[in-house]
Length: 194
Length: 194
DNA sequence: GCTAGACTATGACGGTCGTTATAGCCAGAG
DNA sequence: CTCTGGCTATAACGACCGTCATAGTCTAGC
Image (cartoon, rainbow over all chains, first blue to last red; front, side, top):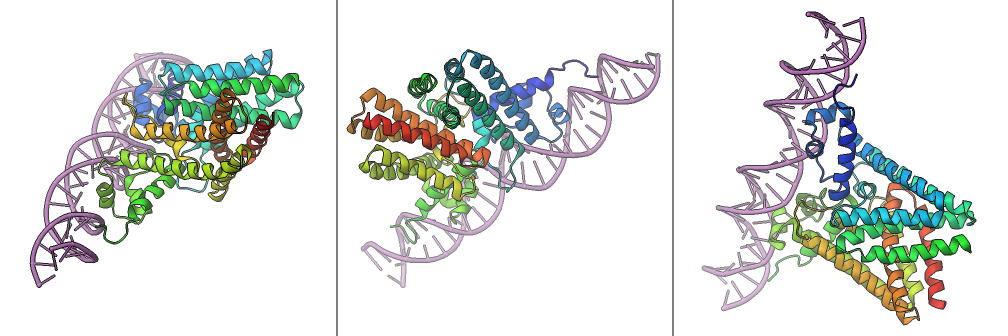
């Protein structure tokens, strides 16, 4: 039934994730997302009838899945290889965008609406973080790390990288990432062999 | 020369920092900041003639200085005590606001304008991060940690805590903070005595 | 070829944004 | 008591926001 471009919808989602990772959710308007994806404004409400909230939710999941897929693959070579790839991914994003882009999942996590309910986009962000943590923790456990230690290390890695990316953007430098990477790599390597 | 409330200006800044820490910079309007501080809108432009940008910059510095002051004091009892206090501070903020507030410095760091120049608020955020890093690194060095190691650990602590706070907000749970705290405390304690 | 339905084009709705301008208030200095 | 100047009150500016409605286009299946 789709007519011309079945990828139009995905283009919008991917573009939305990119824009959110740069400017944050609230500063990214639906009009701009549509224009950025070369799609008409009407199409966004055709594909995402629940509006901006739905689009943001799908953008978070899209980015989360992309990273998770990469992480799953690289972790086949062990926790250290997975960590290295994780760090390299974020380094590439930060450097290639001139410190303009970061993580859309983090961006969505820190903008709350006045309401009391959890917006679906924030819930999606929570799931993404948990997925990443679980991938790392499972790999660590499979390589002999005690369960509690594996959980803690996995959370530390995700949190440290997310925070470091934000610091790199503020400072316009990769130095925070260099430092965090050195510490995390030593820590994970030590945990795996110890 | 000030008439009634010399603290009106500071009330606006403190309120702005609080609101930015909850909703992000772009979602926080000047009108709301004024109302939140029980100040008229006109006063905002009287105290901050350069507008929202200036107000955001001062809010970032205000929050940064508050934390730095606390950190400086607690670090007198050593790096572990400082870390513990740092963790406790953010835990308190996250818990007492029902996972609604986070760090305004982080929030400002990840929202970029379309321009190429660095907005002053982002530059202020960079300075705040560096101040926090330096306080921790100095304390570590004073307790026998090698300089490079001290720098790396300091960056890791700041980044990990910032990232963890965001994760706690998304997941509506202090579990990430529990895990990160356990790892960081062990790491810093080991570095100091080793 | 025709028709159903996925998609687009267009325009409007009420609302809020950042910012500015102007006139007025009112405590303290002289 | 007057007057200066820090502060407030009020209104407006153009721009953009999220969302919706409606009419139109064009393709895939019959």
